[in-house]
Image (cartoon, rainbow, N blue to C red; front, side, top):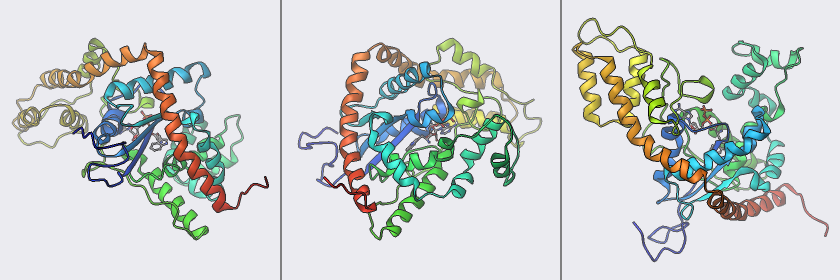
Amino acid sequence: MENKEIKDNKTSENGDKKKVVLSGIRATGNLHLGNYYGALSKFVRMQDDYDCRYFVADLHALTTHPDPKMLHENVKDILAEYLAAGLDPDKNTIYVQSDVPEISEMYLLMNMHVGIGELMRTASFKDKARKALGIHSEGDEIEKEIIGNQTNQRVNAGLLTYPTLMAVDILIHHADLVPVGKDQEQHLELTRRFARRFNSFYKTPYFSEPFNFNFGGEAVKVPGLDGSGKMGKSEGNCIYLIDDEKTLRKKVMRAVTDEGPKEPDSPVSEPIKNLFTLMELVSEPSTLEHFKNAYADCSIRYGDLKKQLAEDILKTTLPIRERILDIRNNDEYISKVVRQGAEKARETAAKTLADVREIMGIRKFY
Ligand code: ADP
Ligand code: TRP
């Protein structure tokens, strides 16, 4: 609700300071339904009640070596997608990570308190290291392979220290809440650990501990259309917000299913569960109920299920797609939004960085 008495987006109607929300998405390609339900839709829902800062993580994207010509376009895509999904630049601070150089300096400082071992044990690091080296080892083996690797492939140090940079993104704003998908919870756990470690090392309760936020529910994991696992850019199983109607329908109609239930109340297989999970996100509860009942009494036709699912996904994505195309053509608007965002983000970031330098003993002679 609009209230003329509110002077800025940092204070709520009753005069209390709003909680700080911070989140970002790497600039590695267009956003898909996983990003939307895991992150972006939460960003939008939070914008009225919190002091929100949302950014595009272009420095994080560098860890996987994007084509330099593509990186800028990718940043622009995500900005257009943020705005098209409904983020209001007057309510939120929307910025590009590299526009805030204070983050890079604090990343260097914070790394002094981060252990190589704990970084090497991070699940996302192990995944990316495996990909970089083209190996499939599990458990501790991966660490030996990274150190002992004799080939030309290397795992870059930026990938290892990814969680430090993410922690700094969050701590530099003293964020309370960080809306992200389930796969990011280990990074949040590390952020809390780094915050506690900093506080106890310097004997000052400087950082508070940030938590994921999911409107009281579980963090969502949007499944892919290929029958297993999560929807993800590198899994090649995505429905993108920018997909046109024909592409989207085709993708849904090709989703993996099974042979169908043979007897009433059969257990539901993984691919069908996934379709139900997607339906839970995009369809009316009664629609989902209808198909679940049809599954239970063996009358279900997967063709109908998919058609309905495509229809309901399109209801969400098509209006967003239209707006993405519009905004993407409006360079002036995009640059105004990020300039204003960078200014606001740098205000807080500069203050935190100055404090951290002071706490750590970096002082000037002049
Ligand atoms: P991707 O896995 O496609 O590379 P990112 O790692 O860039 O996506 O994720 C950006 C945000 O979207 C994060 O907050 C992440 O938790 C969320 N996210 C990504 N995929 C999913 C998914 N399948 N389900 C729920 N959230 C997701
Ligand atoms: N690691 C997040 C991802 O892969 C992106 C990210 C970087 C982020 N810094 C962040 C998310 C800070 C939340 C807060 O999606």
